[in-house]
Image 1: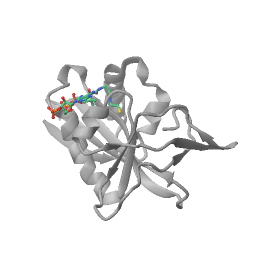
Image 2: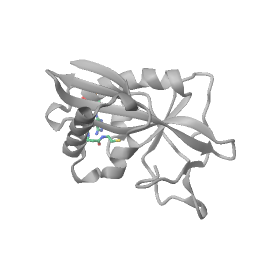
Image 3: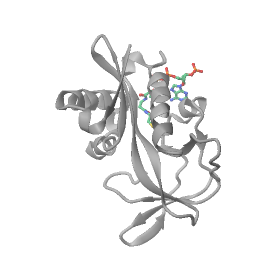
Length: 177
Ligand SMILES: CC(C)(COP(=O)(O)OP(=O)(O)OC[C@H]1O[C@@H](n2cnc3c(N)ncnc32)[C@H](O)[C@@H]1OP(=O)(O)O)[C@@H](O)C(=O)NCCC(=O)NCCS
């Protein structure tokens, strides 16, 4: 398997098309154009086998507020996917482990939101967020509905993040988290 690390502006049109096919296969109807947009603007790990794209993970900078602390930029993990035909073979772990290196070079804290893959990320050192989550919109800060899938990773051992705090993101098109 071949692992490539690319900034978003290095991902060419052919790779973007391959990525969309991968995401559509892996997420099925749970992936839309907004989700695809959210995956860009940071750093990507692409896993290929025999030239074929079989895995992806990316992280993008996002302003986040923990409790009433100042807003800070965290790495936000997006669009993690393994080709369904290759799941359960360590591809996702490979992509995420490499992405963790990139995250630790750029940000002290990383967040992600997952529906069904909590156990996958827990095995990789991520922890569930225990506090409530909010979204800052044009109309003010609004509480999210039940949000059980938020997870955090700290890449600097000297940084302690209180997982019971409320956490706020900035609104965006598509899913805010
Ligand atoms: C989640 C996903 C990326 C995992 O990729 P993968 O290549 O199959 O994962 P790996 O083979 O590297 O698995 C690594 C470990 O996580 C475990 N694992 C994989 N998927 C899991 C899941 N959904 N829930 C719990 N554990 C999971 C594996 O059993 C393995 O455990 P082990 O180390 O004890 O053997 C893949 O199933 C996928 O693309 N799913 C659809 C898209 C999706 O939901 N992405 C995540 C969105 S946030």
